[in-house]
Length: 313
Ligand code: AMP
Image (cartoon, rainbow, N blue to C red):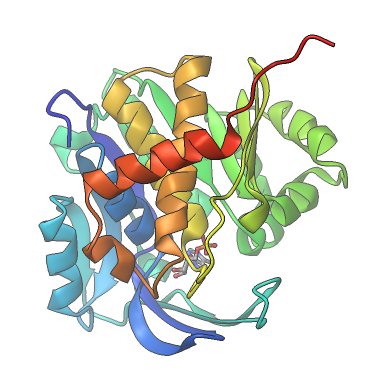
């Protein structure tokens, strides 16, 4: 990690996932949007994690965060059960069916940022109840020094269930990341550029639409930018790919301390790089054997993947 990188604050779910793909089934493994985000971002910037787990949360998972120097001062451990989610993927990974979501300790969670974290310059509100996302944002704003860049994620569960709160939040963030289905659901527009335009009118000046193995599209003041997904032959588990993308994206921005259109484009590629590693194993297991050299190598392979010359016709 670069010593000059700025701190990156994240709030979101930390939980236990039960996942079935054509590669097998894993029960109660480490999951949650903020977990994937934190560990992916930790390769690039110092991460501050805010969330809650229950007393059943295994110490090994805590140790994984610590091994990646993720600051856990904002991760509460309270009596009760940890957040749980379970899902199953179609054999070709074209669809995912959620079988169960148990909010458990997240139902009563009221995030309270450690005082020293209120001035975090870069903030990511990972997928969780928009009321909790807003509460964290307000605590950073109260410090009198607004964050330099705030991005948030969301999903169908909240677009359906907490739409008014989500709209309230969107008025106050710089960027929204969501997948294509969610973009259509939120905007009521089937066409993605039209959906992005409608979402930008709700507040965020930038929108990233994630499209699984079709890559991601960025709509912002610099126009449109497309990052493909790195072609991976042996996909094991796509869970958390979007959150790992977010971690790579925000990690790069915090490392550079800049949100210019050029840096944001590089961040899109860094997001795709981290997402491409995440899908190569279940849970966060691929990150356990990842290092900066591998990240650098895949980033270079990415540049080769999309490089072409302009022509004079
Ligand atoms: P992704 O594959 O990027 O959509 O993220 C999957 C992760 O999101 C899993 O590890 C889940 O634990 C987590 N998740 C699923 N549903 C929810 C929810 N309603 N709120 C917060 N996190 C969730």
